[in-house]
Length: 236
Ligand SMILES: Nc1ncnc2c1ncn2[C@@H]1O[C@H](COP(=O)(O)OP(=O)(O)OP(=O)(O)O)[C@@H](O)[C@H]1O
Ligand SMILES: [Mg+2]
Image (cartoon, rainbow, N blue to C red; front, side, top):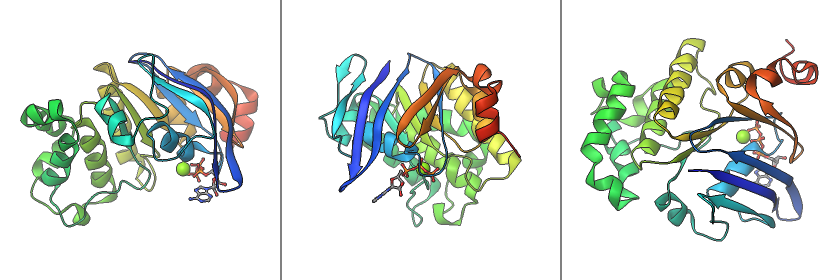
């Protein structure tokens, strides 16, 4: 299912942070959105999932305008969001957290046991920790639960905000490989990342956000080789 953002504008009170955000996630595409701290990446994802009102612009999912719909309605249409900071219920078990993800959609609830098995196949560590309280998981395991919970709603397009934050290089690899695996099953992915090199490697298409505006776009591999991108985001 295709996701299109057309000229999104959004503000926190009087302070406008999105000025012109246009991008497309084609059906089944893996798209990376990169940019410095404060560029507006999280705000963009929040606008797409309906957690942040738009000042102007349009969001289309599968050709349908969802800009005015509630977050819940957007989930029903196949939009999934793995938020910044994971936002699990720490006093609930791994499995209870995952099952909550299926509750938001009746079609997903009916097949929740099959989907649970798929999530445990994707992340065997979670299968071993079904009954452990989410608050006692490591950061990487919590990220797996956050992704798994979004998968439980059977999304067609998945928004993922900084999944590698605070993770070791090894766990970052595990999480990115899982996102790629999810994508090979036809789920479109819009990935926001500070880990620019790895996300550009993964991405079919990538966009660079600066001060609330998309300033560059192209295939991930091409942006990796772009001297301006290298200077701004890949220097170390
Ligand atoms: N709740 C809020 N109230 C006021 N301003 C906010 C709020 N949330 C974010 N902002 C501001 O909006 C701008 C964009 O923030 P956003 O979180 O979208 O950036 P980001 O690209 O995700 O950054 P990071 O890489 O640090 O996560 C920043 O200047 C930020 O200070
Ligand atoms: Mg952010």
